[in-house]
Every structure is written in C-alpha cells, then in structure tokens.
Image 1 (cartoon, rainbow, N blue to C red):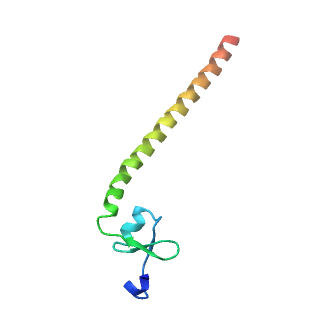
Image 2: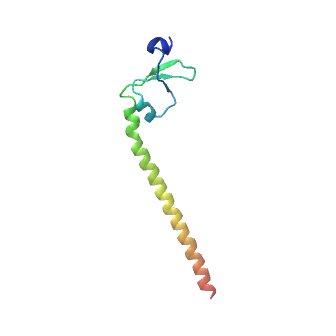
Length: 91
C-alpha cells in the first residue's frame, strides 16, 4: 500500500531518522523510509517522552562544559603561577 492511497497527493511526511522536535511539528505525520514506504504514524504521545528528556540532556552538556572550563582555568592559573614562581626564584 502506498502513502498516496492512504492520504492522497498532498502528503506531508517525515524521515524516520528525524528528531523529536521535527516530529512534534508534524503530529500524525506518516513515517516513511528512504524509499517512501509507510513505516508508521507519529501520534500525539510519541514525541512527549523524547521532548521531556531534552532539558536533562542539555543540562548534562552544560555541566560537562562548566567542568571542562573549570579545569582549563585551573590549568591556566597553575601554569601562570609556575612561571611566576620560576621567575621569582631566578632573581
């Protein structure tokens, strides 16, 4: 069965590799594979768990970046003080 047989000619589809955000925009859109074969339908409830996880993922990424920045800052200060110490001792 083709998408056209189910929906007519003006069909909005979404690739099965699309993001949850993409799917949220197109509720009840047919899910198709690269050849255009029907693989399912996006229902209203499908993207909700995925969208709910996004803030947590963003928070984890932010925290990782904060920790990396703190380590870079610590390394920078340590290097600067080591250089200052070497200069001070040489006098």
